[in-house]
Length: 394
Image 1 (cartoon, rainbow, N blue to C red):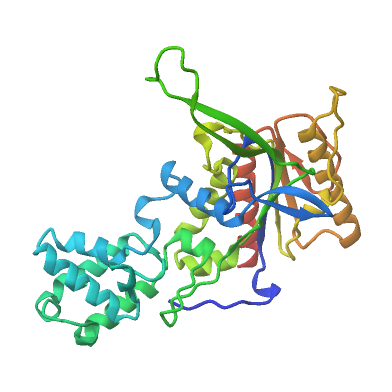
Image 2 (spheres, rainbow, N blue to C red; image 1 turned 120 degrees about the vertical axis):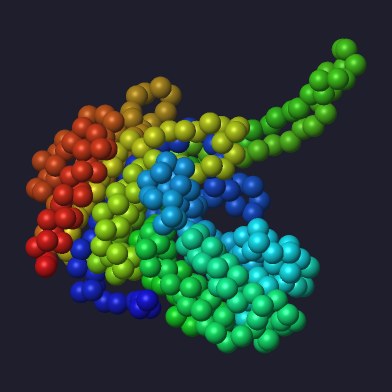
């Protein structure tokens, strides 16, 4: 597997951008270390925020939950590599010896175990690798069982075993999640991979003020007539319409995957999961299962553009029941800014755009923008544009 490095714009000759507007009801989907909804200052105003890491986690989880990708291509991010390998080995060997073999073998490639916290079967760092590689590593340990079982330290593990396991961990080909979101493991040479997908922090299109909910919990078995609360506390929440943005380099994705047959399914899964996935933070108490209201997909061969500056001036729809539609106004602002960027900077090479919305907020005539009624039609249209662009480059 070839290790990728940061490259200039000419190496990213075909991009897919997703611009999504999604309005959530009162909730705390992604909280900070104090338990408050995450936020940020943008354009001089406080905005609600959902971190890029939270969104990528949601997309990866959606891959598995909705079967967007073949199960054998999915990956795991874990400290439990040695423990999982030991479980596989224990089907054929003594459990205690299996754990010893797994730990020493994993440690021999440079992945230090967390002995300080007495978690001797866990690595110090998270390791991102295809789930199938756990079985492959276990297979190597099983094959060299007699040579490794007596090893009392990582230094005693045969070099042949160490080299094979290191190569297995290094190999991230045919792993869509790693190809999309990259991998950084400082302990291993050549294990890193540059992400082909760039995901921005989502920010609200409008200014926000975090609100507090005072709540009490009553004791069901308290004496009759005793209405005292058994517990009282406050919880913070926010309601916001988020602008979500991501950009995918199709050539880098194909290079990372190393398997042409996985390119289209991975792009399809990325689009579907990006539109469907929602943060899960405190959903039991908010049920903020609000779908996206607007999706704009742009395929081009130039430089990616975030359209966040459409909301430098926060959307304001007034108060006191005076009407106004926060989502509709956000759509209008985004379309207007997209049009202005195209006029000022010109359309990028091969640029085509497809959009769909859950309301007739705008249908401005923007050159190269096609409106479709559903996400499914948008998805098929985008895949067709990418296939045509890639065919034209060959």
